[in-house]
Length: 116
Image 1 (cartoon, rainbow, N blue to C red):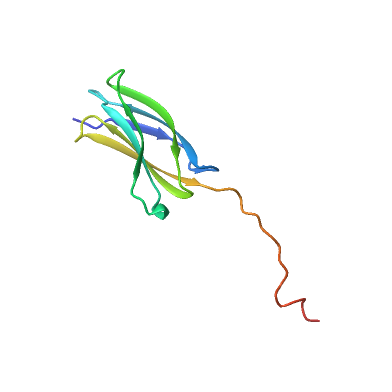
Image 2: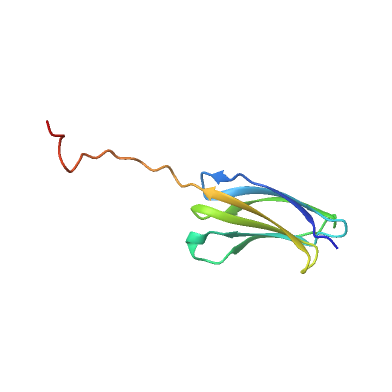
């Protein structure tokens, strides 16, 4: 048996706190279900399952898309497609979630004006 073929598309940099993920899983015998986990090292939390979809249609194909929530900074998104509990595929995408642009303020020098 071979694991499902999985293709995933998502931007690698987003301006907000979600990313739109599109994916397609196919297998010669069955695609049981798909799910997505997201993880951010700076959050100090374990990976979080944020999407699950059982296959209720054509048992050999499953196309889906969803918005995945992100933490600020670098996020590791893992998309899984399972044929059985033991046979699965995974694709990993790293997405940078950028917050609002920082405002740069000009400040005067603490040392005063330059010497003459």
